[in-house]
Image (tube, rainbow, N blue to C red; front, side, top):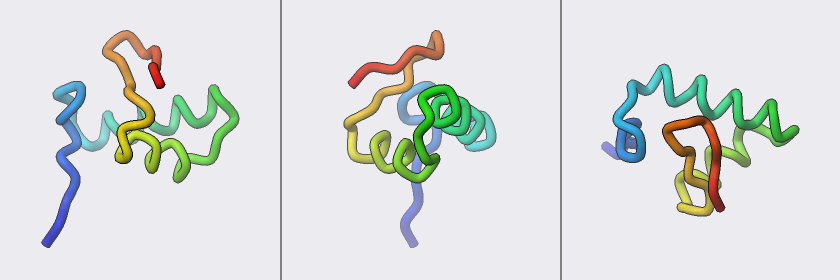
Length: 54
């Protein structure tokens, strides 16, 4: 079985991680799936303050 460690970047719950992903996707007019793929691939890092860095 494979899984994703939701708190590996920010030490947050999976529920909160999904909220962060949705918020980023909405505020940047991007599909949620694209944002999630970018985070998993290491192309996008969601910072503690809500900002993101490439």
